[in-house]
Every structure is written in structure tokens, then in C-alpha cells.
Length: 242
Image (tube, rainbow, N blue to C red):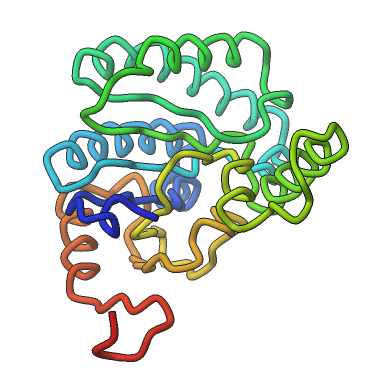
């Protein structure tokens, strides 16, 4: 259940940040500069989220499929991640932002895992907003890992098989303990979910916008929230039912 569903008007917004490469190509620039511009968009969006009715912001930062990209580009992305965590952590902590990372950490460089763990430990008790970065993340991978964890728990006698329900299963996901997203935004005009939060998005609302991620700003986020607020969420019920 999301915070909004529980009676808190603040939302969990998740964003598929798409279009860095196309933004750079349209300007005759290397893809690296598109990714750097994307980092600036992350900063703008985080500031905007704090000023808007948002409790959780989840960003699809690097998918499990992104490892297939050229090694040089992956290396550049990892370096940008290092720089972001090092340069932004102190200010995020000061502003009361909690940092969480979801995904397969075993695939990440050791020094980045250390930075992640430090960020999570330092900001653990912050409550102004939760920023979750999906790194080396894939929705099918997450569901498979949860099923494996459940099987191990049953095998060890820690859990009865007949006790497994949606709530128990959800607790084994990377996002265990987090509310499901209320709104998922995808930039760049593409209309795919791309293996993102497959379980958690069951009743999320989607907004697809043509703007490339490096150009995403406060106005785009506010407009997406306004569109979301204008929709009726029925969770399978007919119109007029609770």
C-alpha cells in the first residue's frame, strides 16, 4: 500500500529516466555529456520533489540490461555514479533525505558498494523524503531473487509454504518495507515499462511524456502530478465503489 492509499496525501513517484543519449546526439555531443546533463536533471527533480507532495522518489538509474552497453560507456556511468554519491550525500543528509539503493549489488564495483552502504547508513533515520536509486536493477531479476529467498526460508524451516501470501512475498523484494509507487513517469516519448518495478506497479498510474530526461524540470513533474490527481483510481472496483 502506498502512502497516498494509507491516507497520506504525499506520493511515491517513480521515474524511468530515458533520453540522455538522444539528447546528446541531437546536439552533436558525446553520450557522456548526455549522461552528465541527466545528473543535473536528477538534482532538479529531487529539489522539486521536496517542494511537492512527494514522500518517495524512485529513479531507474541503471538497469540489469545496461551492463550490455559498451564497456567504455558503462565505465563512464559508474564514474558519474561515484561522483554523484560523493558530491551530493552531505547536502542530501542535511536536507533530511534518506538514500536507498535497490538492485544486484554483487554486479557493482566494490568501491561503489562501499559508497552505497555509507550513504544508506548515514541517512537511515532521515524522514523528509526517501530517494531510491535502482542500480543494476531488473524487475524479473527482483521477483526471481524474492522467490529464491522464500524457497530458502521454507527449506530452513523459517517459513511455512502455506504462509506465503502477497504481503510475505512483497517483504522479500528489494523494495520490502517501501510503499508501492502511485505514479510512474517515463520520459523521451517511449511507452514501455522496461522491466521496472513489475510487481510494485500493479496499480500505479503511468504518465508518458515526450521530453528527454536532461530537459525534465519542476514544471514537468508538477504537470505529471496534476494529471495523476485528475484520475480515478479504482483498484479493480467499478466506478463509485470504494
